Image (cartoon, rainbow, N blue to C red; front, side, top):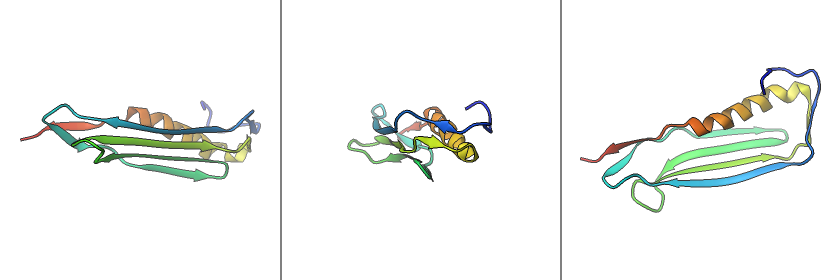
Length: 104
């Protein structure tokens, strides 16, 4: 994903799918202050949905959910830019900062 354009189409040997949920519980006496934003990309042949939300099973719990699906076995060079942007956005999800503050 280094270049922003491609000379040739992309071909994949199989599809790709990931459905992940991570629950983050703060230390006792802390609560979520900032949890980030949701992300949704839906293109022809691939999609990405990701969200961070408060209100899991435990008080103050933050839930991260990601659903990545690529059914396309080929991507034309004209579709590479949105595919590349989706992969970059997916990678940047791992850098999301969740801020917890001490309760009064």
